[in-house]
Length: 141
Image 1 (cartoon, rainbow, N blue to C red):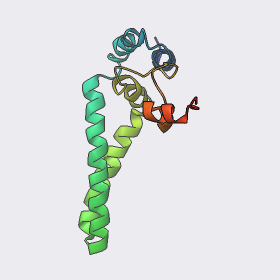
Image 2: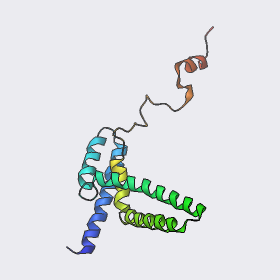
Image 3: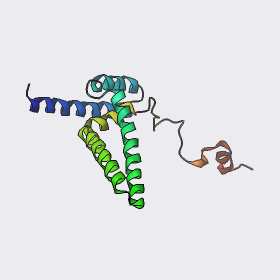
Image 4: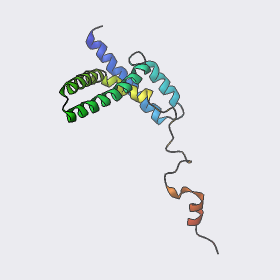
């Protein structure tokens, strides 16, 4: 198997995962089945531990950039260079796995239960309370 074939398989796998997540969002009855299958397909590419580590890396990146800004304000150029270098390295690492991590976000970060927007029990207006509904009804004399 060539490198190009492996990249094509990975791209098709990510597309399949995206479709499974879309199906899970649309089918509230079998949502857990779709998400479980997505986890099974994704785990060889990006494990949940790797995804959680990437979230921690994003937080660390934000802290490093804040440290670099503070060092610029203090004109401490050695700290700026150090924090900037570590931040650039971390950003390159995150960018290298960007596609897999984006799909991992939708799979591992998906809520276990999605509300059905067509459920008759869901309302989006404040007038849905019983007291408002009864006061809006015309009264018979």
